[in-house]
Image (cartoon, rainbow, N blue to C red; front, side):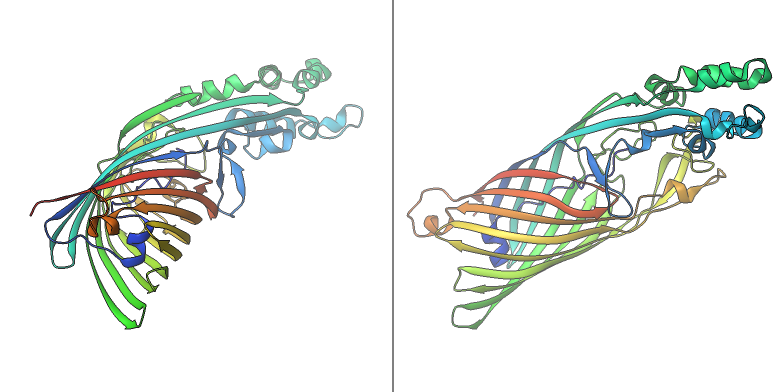
Length: 421
């Protein structure tokens, strides 16, 4: 599976002015928000060491003799490497070990993912400084993998060099290795019961987001106002989680429920400049899921290893510094933040390497955002504009991270208001 893409979308109530004032809707007033998020083509992620790497890395193979001996080319090529290692090449022209001579080149690849999400959100004021919110995204995603073989392949030359000196199994192994190509990887994936990695497409609803938010403000001095918002958030797993029979899918949901809180303290100066920070904590709940449990550290896990296991997901935390300004309905906000998902834990009755199953589940994303906004709320209150609405435009990029995709996206939203009074 392509690493979780942080697709859980913003709950309605965004916009720079709302971020500045920790706004909540008055009782009996509602809002509807429609937004669209378009990701740039995703082709790289940050590995566990924080280094950028191709999404195709799990399919790349170094096919030199010593590499296949360590398992780089799979079990069959590893057996060939062991046979060559045991066959003393020094007996032929005092040459080096045959395993050191063998070079079948390299299998490399290019994986690209494309994601687009549309979401609808709603909010409604139900009491003094209290409102309820919900949002649900519709996610469309696709991925393509193209593998290629580069470099030479001297397996046939080694086979001819050995001639009748090599036992039958070694001759057959070298013969098969001489015709190795990227198609062998595709066939290996298919033989293990996985869907095609060449092309994958999926669409559907993401996880439903619910929240209850409150906010209070206090004037500290002339033109200096402090405010604090707090929200209880619930994530309902209505989206599709990780599919154990796909290697190139893009999940549009977490696959488990989460419940947590978010706080958003702010200081506003003369209603022009604001600064503060956001902090959140989400506890994720255990759930039974289907997974393929590896026996060791294999990339391709046999289909008969698929079983129901208990997933105990790690919790999520987030923190961000926020600074911005607003003037006559126009606003701009800069955000620098970090999201973190603690490592998952798996357990089940089938013996296997559950630690490998949870590998790369410890995730961290450091990101930057620029948010532009425009609203007619103040003008509507002055009766200078007939309709209150908000427009938002967000530019997001992953600055660094561990075990997360390197993403950029552009999000546009429009919010309208209505009164039930």
